[in-house]
Structures are given as C-alpha cells and as structure tokens.
Length: 424
Image 1 (cartoon, helix red, strand yellow):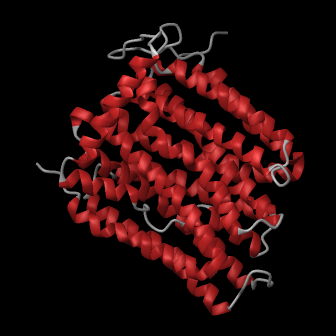
Image 2 (spheres, helix red, strand yellow; image 1 turned 180 degrees about the horizontal axis):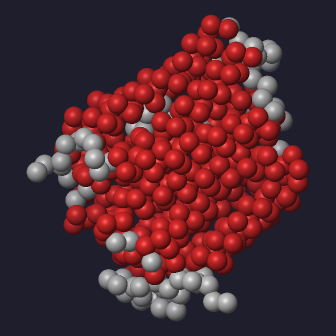
C-alpha cells in the first residue's frame, strides 16, 4: 500500500509539520532531562552539567549559518527541502545509535561530542522544515500550523526527557535510546519519504560549487547585519533576541539538578517532565491562536512578569525552609518545587508564541528569511548562555540566589518592549 503524501491536504500538512518538529524536540529533552539527571545522580557538579548543556545546545544558536546552504544546495530528485530533511534525519540516527553503547559518566567527552553533532543535524533539519513550511503552508493555516509545530517540539522534549527517563526503569539506558531512534526512523519513513514537495518558487539546482555557496553565505551575512543593525527598531529587536525570554531557570538544567538534590526519583522526575511539557504543548497551540487577537506587546509584557513568579515563589520556599543540598528535603518543599515547574511550563507556551509574533512584526519583508532566522538563532543563544551561567551560579551561590537573579535578568527585556513598535 502506497503511503499518502501528507503535503497534499490541510490536515496532512499540519500533521506532517507537527511530527517533524516532534523529532527535533527528542534530542533536546533527552539531553536536558534524561542525561542531566543521570549526571547529577553520579555526582557531577551543577557547573559541569551547565557546561555540558551549553555545548549540546550550541548548534541551535547558529541556525542562521545553515540557511544559505539549505537554499543553494538542492536536489531535483529528492526535492529542495525534502532532501535536506531526509539527510538530516538520517544523520540524526547515525549519531544517536552509538550513544546506546557509551557510558555518559565515564565517556562524557565522546558522549557529548556525538550529542553535539546530533543536535547540529537536528538544527539543520529545523532550518529545512521551516523553509518547507514557508513554501508549502497556505496563508490561512500558518498561525495554527505554527502553534502545532511548537506543540510537536514540546511533545518531543517530553518523549526524549520524561518519556525516556520512564523507559529507563524498564528497558535501561540503551533501550530508551533505541526507542528514540525508532521514533525518528518512523517519522522519516512514514512521513518524509512519501512526501512530494511542490517546488513553487524554489529552484531545485544541485551541483552548486563551493565558491558559489560561500558567496551566498557572504551575501547572507551582509543582509543579516543590515537587517539587524540598520535602524533603531532592528537594533532593539537584536537586543531583545539576545536577552532571555524571561525567567529561564525552571525550564533547563537547574530544574533537573534541583530535582535530584531534592530527592525525587527518576520516575517522579519523568512524570513531572511529562506533565510540564504536555502543558507547554497545549499552551503553544492556545498562544498561537491568541497571538492574532491581542495587543502583542502588552500581552508579552504580562507573560514576562507572570513567568518570573514561579521561580520567585520557589526561591522564597527554599529560604523559608533553610534547605541545603545534601539535606533531606521537607515534603512541602518538594511539592512547592513540582508546582512551580508545572505552572512555569504552562505559562511558557503563551510567551513563546507571543515573542515569535513580535519578531515577525518587526521583520522587513525584503529580507524576511534572513532577519527572522537571525532573531530565532539569537533566542537559542540566550538559552545556551543561560544554562551555563546558572550552573556556575548554583555552584557558587546556591539555588535560591540563582532563582532570584534569573527572575531579575528575565524581567530586563521589559525595558525594550516600548521600542518594538513597528512603523506604520
């Protein structure tokens, strides 16, 4: 039986992009929850884990550099975007499977290197999928499809994080990696392979010379700099992208470290990650729907303030109990931690959609792909440096102080919101 071309219908397109984004979330959840939890249990410091996560996430901060290659080097046989997606997914499998044979504790260097390369191909896939969405989605389905795409990524983070951690208790570390690999292979075989891409305005060239590719990269860089620095609005967008989206500590490495130090079991951490990412997936969809119906800057300001509250509440609880790592955590503190994490992730879906919509609103149509890709790369860079500094801060100042500092830094983006009003 021949598999359907999902790009041929509205429901099929939305399902295809949802599933492709799901595969992008798998390696992120695996690194941030599953591996980080195991490293902490084996006695690795918060600074070391922060450095590990910073390296793993680094390829996502350079998505802007992959765009010219995806645009210029194309395949007539496989399709301009489909070929890149297939190649990236294949390489994600090639770099993921060897991890099943490595011990992340005793072979952390090699394990990290493979995971970095795995995320590199995940980021390349993301660029190609976004390009395919631009040329494939109809105008009246883009907003909802965008919400579904980020919901898919959240569910991928859920499966790679909480899901893999739950599976480890039954099939071990190696088995959980094989399940993640099978998920990527299933999407590649059942969704991407049967797709028939309509090239439209994209010319399937192929055979481009290295000098042509490098020339395109140079042009890309000049356009990006002009778009990002050519006006006060553009420069404000640049700074807004570089700053954290809001408080970040409860979404990344600090959360996994604190969960272990508070005494949560792998099963408890897994269920917490599952509930949190499920909440984010739902509010990503709701946030996409709301983004077309509210004043974006006012809504985004409200979301930034609200997102800082769970971390601040947890900071006060940590101070009230006087708890320190190595001590048995009171049950009330454990429940306060879990509640803060769930509330944070429910709110996070709203803020992400609103921030993306603000970037779209200040992007110049003439260089839309270049400028928007640069903004999104900067947001990934903000995630990368946040997990690094938070790991060092916890090591030197403790969890409570780091949560308070994280909330303060997250609120700083409010200063730029008045400057992000597009000229009419």
